[in-house]
Amino acid sequence: MKPDNRDEERLLISRVQSGDFAALEMLYESYNRQAFGLALRILNSPEAAEDAVQDVFLRFWKTPSHFDPQKGRFITWLLGVVHNQCIDQLRRKSNNSVSLDREENQEHFSYLADDGPPVEEEVWLIIQRGIVRQALDKLPTEQRRLIELAYFKGLTRQEIATTTGQPLSTVKHRIQQGLLKLKDMMQAMEVEPGV
Image (cartoon, rainbow, N blue to C red; front, side, top):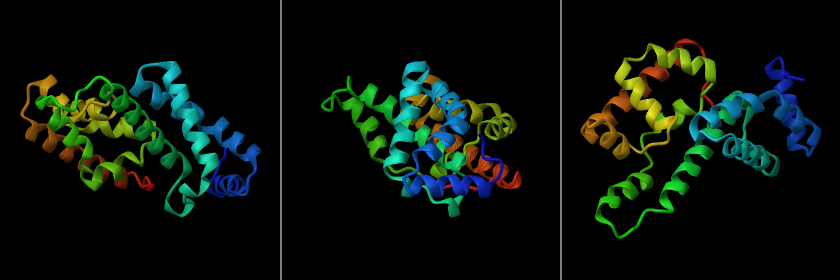
C-alpha cells in the first residue's frame, strides 16, 4: 500500500515512531524501488545497493526521530539519506587502499574533511528521481556531467578534475553553479526541500 498523500505518509511515520513494524514495512514497500534505483546508479552493484537501502531503513527503524515530517516528504529525506550512505560506502571502499602518508592523497583527505557548501546538502536532500532527472537535463552539459560524476559516481572534486583535465577551481565552481540552478529549478517546480 503506497501512501497517496502527505497525511497518510505522516500517519505511517507516526506509527513507525511508536514502534509499529508493519508501518515500516509499508513504507519500505512503497519507496524501496526508488531508493534501490538511486543506490544502484551510484554503487553500480545490485548487492551493494540492496545493502545500502536496507541499512537506511534499519537505521530509520532504530531512530525514527531522525526524520521530521514538518521539514518535508519522507521520500525526499529517504533518498537524501540513501545518497549519503552510498557516497560514504564509495569513500570507505576507496579509502581502504589510500595511504595517509602519500602527499598526493592529502588534498583528497582535506576534501573529505571539508563540510562543503550548505547548498549541496539542501539540493541533494530533495532528490526525487524523476524531478531531478528533468532538472539535470535542463542544465548546461558541462555542469550536468560534473554533477553526475560527483553525485552518481561518487568522485571527489579532485578526482573529477583529474579525470576531466579541468582545474580544480573550475570543477568546484561549475558544480556549485549547477547545484544553485538545480535548487532554483526545484523551487520553481514547488518541490519541498527536506532536511
